[in-house]
Image 1 (cartoon, protein in one colour):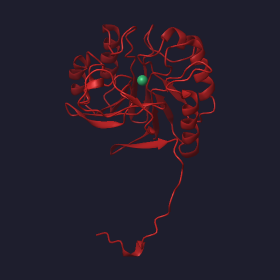
Image 2 (cartoon, rainbow, N blue to C red):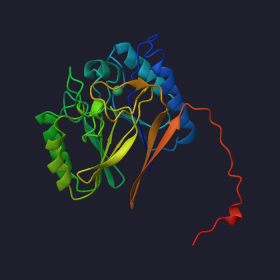
Image 3 (spheres, rainbow, N blue to C red):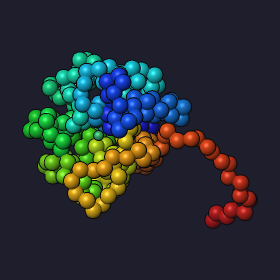
Image 4 (cartoon, rainbow, N blue to C red):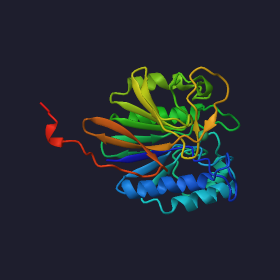
Length: 269
Ligand SMILES: [Fe+2]
C-alpha cells in the first residue's frame, strides 16, 4: 500500500499571490511530481489549509489543480479553510459527522481516520465533544492499526512558534490512543515543516506545505517566519511489518547522478 500526504496548499483565488508566488503553480508542481513517480499510490491525503482564506474561487481553483492528479484524494480542513465554501465546490466530500469533514475508511489491514480539527475563527485546533465522541466510537469499532490524519498536530514539536497553535485539547485524545490494542500513527500538517518523533510513545509525522515553509527557529515564541524552503510530500508505506515514511522534495531541478564508485568494492556481511 502507498499513501501520499501533502499539506498546506494555501490556494488563492485567480491572480492572487502569496508572498509574491502563486500557490497554485507550486501545487501543480507537486501534482506533476506525484503523477510521474507515484501514480500507483492508493490515495493522496491533503491535510488541510487547502486555501489561504477560504475564498470560494480558491476552492474552484483547487478543484481545477487536482483534476489531473492520478491517485484519488481525501481532503481535510485546516484553520485557513471554510467548510461552507469547501462544500459548495466539493459537495460530494465524505463525512460521517454532519457539519464536519470527518470520516474513516479501511485500507487493507489499516483504518485511516480523517479528523476535522478546524475551530472557526481560531488558529489552534480543537475537537469538540461531537468530534471526540465520533472518534471514540470509531476507535472502539476497529481493533487494527490506525493511520490518524489531522491538520493540527497533537504533539508539541519543541517548536515554540507553532506549538501554542497545535490541537489544544490533544491530551483528551491521549488515553483513547494509548488504549488502542494496535499501533496508531499520527500524520499532520499546519507547522509547514517535515518532522517526526514520538508523543507518549505514539509515532507522529508532520509534512511541509506545498507553497511555503516556516523557518526552523527553536528559540523564538510568537509567530513563525515564512520562507520558500524546498517543499516535500510524504510517501507512507504501511505493510505487515509496520510502516515507513519517506519525505520527497519536489520543485527542484531534477539532476540525478549515477553512482560512479566501484560497486564491486562494497562489502556486506
Ligand atoms: Fe498552513
